[in-house]
Image: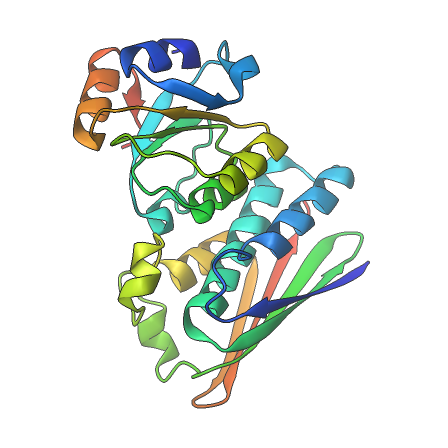
Length: 114
Length: 137
């Protein structure tokens, strides 16, 4: 699924990484717990999270995750976006809940990791 | 190549800076992506442990032709029972740490999973020394 399709499904705004909207991701992972994200062996995925802090970006950086959707209408801060841009990430912000976002993407064919 | 970084306990803003720098250097050295990911995840988890539990710490990195050795040394409370701390899900993290998205008791088990060699020396009331070795494939 292309990132631009994910943005459309989730009615999301693109905070950075608009040049990556044609990138394909196969799987999604929803979590507010970065400890769990760091245990994943997969990397071609979109992280869907309501945890909006610098460590969410750092976690994605270490785990080679190139796209994050922040849900519940949370906004990434300027230092977060700076770090995301430095790492070539695409950051999307959706007004939907974590549950609704995950459900819509699953329904549209985005695969779970497990 | 040798590198040294310092870590301040409680400073979540800068946690991950050493891991980020190490990642950049390993990329420049054309180490394969999977190995880099293992190394930086282990280092990042170890950094977060220092930030979450200790007062301050140092990261020493030594990169040779065929391996990377990382020492994460902290001044902190130490680990009373290492075997227990290695069990997935065991955590003594504060609510503040959990709010940051960590403290699920996955740190040390995940470090073990992502390293070829792991050695932990700890003294209660003084601190912990974690040595991690990863070989370049």
